[in-house]
Image 1 (cartoon, rainbow, N blue to C red):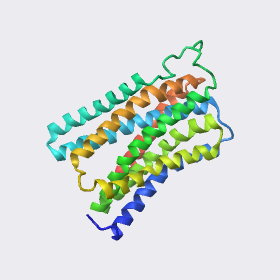
Image 2: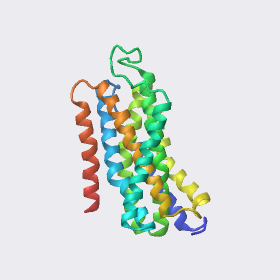
Image 3: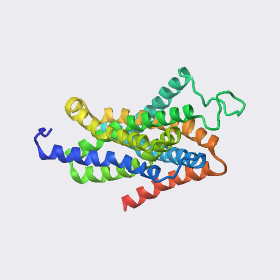
Image 4: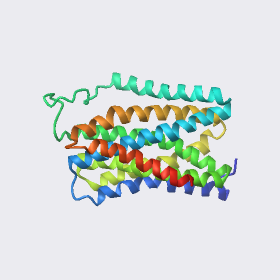
Length: 269
């Protein structure tokens, strides 16, 4: 492992920081928005949900399976990756079961329902930020150590993660702006979430470098992918549907998946 004084370490950290800051770029659309509105909120939440599901199932879960495959073999790699994904789903199901959830009923007569329930939107934004921040830590670790091992591998990975982080910034900024009507808070929330990547890289270098292995990354990526898929389906899409006036939910869902799919296709050419 290179010493902290090595230029390779600082280069890897700088690339990881740049990828993380791409999260803040997604919030710029919020800064230029005249005022928050329910249709924008619905589209933004659905866009984020589609992006999160696509990234989780095509990128993060794949990373989990690949990591387990390198640790064991292809058959066990797929089995362990699937098991880690289901563990992530089970983890968030248990949390959802024991923590009261205001979206349990979509009936407008429900006293929890309000057309402009800012407390509810704040909760959705907070959960989204927590989930994205949590998965930014392993992404930061992956980018950092890939750069240390081989810049030719780390740079493309950082670029792909940066592309993914833009809709994640939207996912955080839109509900925060709608709930607070404060553009600074919206931008700040996205920025702080993005900073989790270089922070995760630094922690990994200082504390975890001696114990990180393919199996560890397999479990981390698998669990995070399960958590993100459940969050998107259980939190983001129901919230988007509630505030939609027309087809914003399906348009946002398809746009979120499509933008990520196209970006990945272009990246691989």
